[in-house]
Every structure is written in structure tokens, then in C-alpha cells.
Amino acid sequence: MEVKHPEIPILYFVIPCYNEQEALPVTAQKLRSKMQNLIANHQISENSHVVFINDGSKDKTWNQIELLHEENRLFRGIKLSRNYGHQNALLAGLMTVQQECDVVISMDADLQDDIHAVDAMLEKYQQGCEIVYGIRSDRETDTAFKRITAQSYYKLMNAIGVELVYNHADYRLMSQRVLQELSGYEEVNLFLRGLVPMLGFQTGKVYYSRASRLQGESKYPLKKMLHFAFEGITSLSVKPIRMITSLGIAIFLISLFMLVYILVRHFQGYTVTGWTFLAVSVWGIGGLQLLGIGIVGEYIGKIYLETKHRPRYHLELYLK
Ligand code: UDP
Ligand code: MG
Image (cartoon, rainbow, N blue to C red):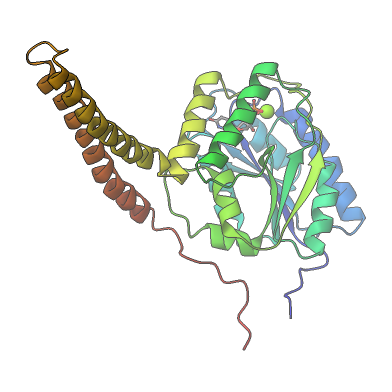
């Protein structure tokens, strides 16, 4: 028999904040009334909370979190010792609260993601989903540049064998069960939206349209975004190494053809003395070198994956 989820679950919102002093008051206000509604409708337990994670902000973010906590115990705060970046801050929040709640929803402090999608998420949870992805129904609030780069990125990730949920970022619901499984991933190189689909379990999708940021500015400038994109590739795939191996094999094969071609030219007398030897050497040695690097890389890739100590499987049920 399927394990049933609690009818009135304890819900925690987990919200990483980095220099969000402009956004926080508005965000807190909106979340408070949303929570009060959900509690009044018996959709969530009155022991539910909003947890802000201060990711080493340089502004008044932490003071505001403290004040919110003083004012209303609905709000809780976690203070990280310095700035660790969005993904780490989010993970810190998830892992800290996992024993206290039945279900977690992670979202950004700027509330660009529609909080009213929470109702649909909870509904899916009640239907048995362990993970519910918040998915943007459009990208109208994005610049053309962001739209094109994002789309190409999904295609690239797909091509190298990484399963990503299209147009989903870090707005998602996860059950306590799933958080526990997630805690088995001990990697430092963290790309949550790539890890979560690896967990399996029953999942659902909820669509919403994303607003633009109202207060403060984006904490993801181009440089951080590129870094994050690269992190996604290297933390989930060793395909780039394999490409070097393939390239090495290809070039070495070409060198064999070149050898024949060059010998033919040589005996036809079209060549300058010494050219044959040089041309064949360049192709042959180049190919062999790439192949060699690729093979070494294969082993490094294996070592890399081993060092992550990822769980090898997740049990869903044990009938006994
Ligand atoms: N954030 C964080 N640490 C950082 C950078 C960002 O905790 O080093 C948080 C930020 O406060 C926000 C979320 O990550 O809650 C997403 O950032 P933002 O909304 O600026 O990203 P964008 O929507 O522009 O992609
Ligand atoms: Mg944002």
C-alpha cells in the first residue's frame, strides 16, 4: 500500500536571501497572508513556517529577518557564516529544516515566482507526489538574450545526457521523504535542479507565469550565471571528456588516410623533400596525444564520479 501523506502537512517555505533588504518586507508581507490563508483553509498545519536563509548579506537583510522573527514566530531565520552562493544557501535551508516538517517549498526572495502556485503544488502532494516542479509557462518577462541562452542550455544539457526539467528553476515542493534521500548527495559542486530529477519518485508539474523582479536587482549577473551553467555541466556529466577521446580517435583515423594520401603524392613526385615525414608525424602524433589525454580523462571522470559518493539507488517501497 502507498504511504499516505498527512492530510494537513507542516509546510516550510525555504528562501535563500542575499542582499534582499528591498525585497524582504514585501515578500514577508505576502507570504504571511498566504500562510494565514492556507492555515485557515486547513491546507497546511499551523506549525508551518517561513524560513529565510541569510547567505552572508552585506546589507540589512539579517536585521530584517531578526525583526520579522520577533514580530511573528511564523518567520524563522538561518544565518550562514558568509556568502556561499544560492545553491549552497538553499541546500543549507533544506537540510536544516528536514526533520521539522512534512513538506518544503523552495523559492526566491523576490517572489518572482507566483506564490499562488503553492495551492496546486499542495494538491499534487496530496495526490501522492513527492516532488512537484514549478514550471514557467512562458518566458515573456525575460530578455531575448536570456531566453535564447536558456533554451540553448537546455538543449546542450539534453545532448550530454543530463535530465533537466524544462523551464524549471528552484521553485519546487519536496516531501520530507525526498529531502532525506537528497541528503545522501554529499557533493560540493552543487546543481540542485540537476540532482532532484535523479532522485526519481512520483513527481508532478505545476505551471505559472513568472513576474519580473520588483524590488532590488538580480543577484545573478552574467558572470555568476555562466559559472552556474558550467557548474551544471561539469557536476553532472563526464561527456566533455569523452568528446576529447572521440576527437582523438577521429584525428588518428584521419592521419591514417593522410598517410596513404601523402605516400601517393610522394611517389607521384609532387612533394618537397621532408614534407611527407612531417605531415604524417603531425597528424599521427596529434591524434595519439588527444587519444591519450582522452583515456586519462576517462579515468579522471570515473574518479570524479566516485569521489561524489552519490547514493547508488533510492528505495521507494519495501513490502514485508
Ligand atoms: N541568492 C543567494 N546567494 C547568492 C545569490 C543569490 O542566496 O549568492 C538568492 C537571492 O537572494 C534570491 C535567489 O538566490 O532569493 C535568486 O536570486 P535572483 O532572484 O537575484 O536571481 P534571478 O531571478 O535574477 O535569476
Ligand atoms: Mg529573481
